Length: 504
Image (tube, rainbow, N blue to C red):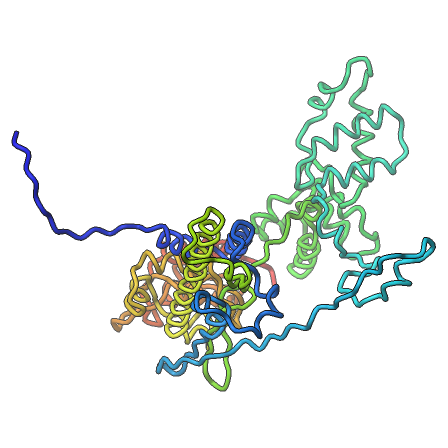
């Protein structure tokens, strides 16, 4: 085979490290972006938070760092104002002010018997008072489980050593819902044979634990848990005894909403049975769930939307991203013609800092551009609610902003929009469509809202079936099959018609 040299011309897309960084920042949520910025600040000495450079803002920047100084100024200035379809853009300025820091001089010699307050006057503090029930320790302590809460009550309850061993075994067999998942035989098998514990002793200790808080804990089924809660109510409460009889003997009929059979067996009228059912519904079938509450998940909205003088204004949330800039003193140490290791280290970090700021700037511009187009499309939702939601897919926004659908998918994933109607993920505004008899289109979100409205306004004695809901929607020129109604209803956790039936 003969070897030859040839010249070939072609196009090839190369993912540079800077482009990879920009794509990765684009798909990060606000919380992940905070962590990413913090990691970069710790690794790159050329970057710092804007708050750390308050005194340096009055000084002129040199030519080498002027182009990449403050991302916050350009990010906060990108305030788009959506009008009545004209696409006008309003630009705002950051009016946040920072007070100068209090500086104090430490004296060289202090008297031996002096106090801190004698030298430094007390300053206002935002820390919570000692009697604050929600201070730093309460916010940062480990989450308390149901077992921890029950063990704490057990330590305050006087009982013999043997009973204490039995109580510990019972508490360990209680699940997070507060139910005892082990039988008496299983508990007896776990004890030391030398203790010679009998079933009667286990039953006595279990009865004591069932008097612990929360009410109904330690029950072996839902019926027993509800019965324990009813027994601890005031005996003078109306229908208490009848409610105990129903949860003991007819809980399956009540759960199936078989009121006809229930009325025949209990000899109760509709009004009396409705009052008893309301009393039972006020109880908690999972008493332990109130104790083992998981940590709250807080959402930081990336974009803010508000209506001002009849126009919808879209702007980035300044609290979602820390404001960073180039460290001027370090940047001034970089020398152009110096190839020493120290100067190379500073020059490389300065270049990386500029690319990072540029990638953040690109992320903010893209996010704001996409959010603005979404608000333009879904202005009806902001004005009238879910029933006015329009069908929207990624391709529509991609064409409007002249970007690829994959970029729109990255932008809208785990990004949140704060509106007067609440906080929504950007993906919430995208939905499929259903055709109408007149040739139009209706968003699936709007259909869900209509189904929710119909079920909330229905007659509780005769709830609407899926076929009836489909017929009502057909009367409004919306072609929806019964199985589609059932799918949308289940997605909103709305039970079927037989389970929605009530007496009043």
